[in-house]
Amino acid sequence: MKRIYLDHAATTPLDERVLREMKPFFSEKYGNASSLHSFGREAREAIERARETVASAINAEPEEIVFNSGGTEGDNTAVHGIAYPNRKKGRHIVTTKIEHHAVERACEFLEKDGFEVTYLEVDREGFIDLPKLEAATGKETILVSVMHANNEIGTIEPIAEIGKICREREIYFHTDAVQSVGKEKIDIKAMNIDLLSASGHKFYGPKGVGFLYVRKGTKLRPLMHGGGHEKGLRSGTENVVGIVGLAKALEIAEAEREKEAARKRKLAKGLVKQALEIENSWMNGPEIGKKRLSNNVNLGFDFVEGESMVLMLDDKGIACSTGSACSTKDLRPSHVLLAIGLKPWQAHGSLRLTMGRDTKEKDIRQVIESVNEIVGKLREISPMYKGGN
Ligand SMILES: Cc1ncc(COP(=O)(O)O)c(C=O)c1O
Image (cartoon, rainbow, N blue to C red; front, side):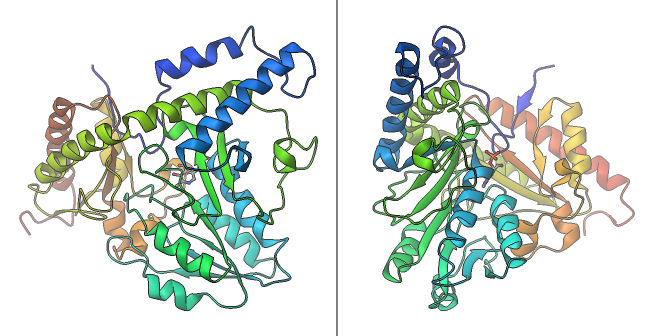
């Protein structure tokens, strides 16, 4: 059975070209980048080359890139790292109701520690309202954290406008760009971003490595203390092989970005058009081709359980995910789908399909055929479904 992988928002395979670049750093070039000898210097040079590649992809300076273990660490470092050293100025943070748990839970932790957090509502398509963001900020606000692109419904938030508002008010602005780096153009200077988190495994790089962009002059406290690596912002022996892989993956993603986005957008359009021919179905998130990640499709079907759909599709070799976070054994409906106004049962009936570089038109045809059949079967056994209503 040919397997079709449509869960690229969860993770991507490692690109062969990335693997080739990484290989020498597993074996011959194994030096510790802090060592003074030639092995160490070799590793250090590789890290600094990678830093330049990453910086140039987002129009940053190399010294503003902090390598770390990925998105979760980047988000936590940004939220906690700004909150504590800046609390004399204020204890208020503004974020949204649709952030990844790495930002959401970091904020909830701060609430228990005397900070006040405003969680902005979003509209039906997942967009925040800029005047409401402006109104939510005040003299006490020290940080605004709004994700660039949503991992469930693909909504791309107005980052440049948010950055402008924050810069004018001298409030730090962090964006979780884990889903958008390598897929959307990012210019941290033009967008007035102070902190940006990214993760290698979302753009065909290795897992367990990422970076946090930290604008020069930002008052940030590290999460970890130790040998003072990464300018004291991320202690711990550098993951040289991971960093080399991440940089190569980003270089490839940037070179292929526009062509790939156009190709996936076309596939997404076709997929949505056919899926919406199934009765009592709908699409979550913005229209395809508008401010939405090119590879993201999120569909809803009345009278079916998303988890059952995912498992039945898996039996047919198709890998995708549902709106509810059952992978973490949490059966509550997705907080993102609830925030855009879905009822809990509707949120349970949703399916996220995220395409990758190897997704072809014939895969989409097969997926549609399978979804159609499975939705029909599940509705047959649903006590709620009367047929045609
Ligand atoms: C938007 C977003 N932020 C953060 C993360 C966490 O990244 P990581 O897996 O590198 O910890 C993810 C991963 O799914 C994500 O989609």
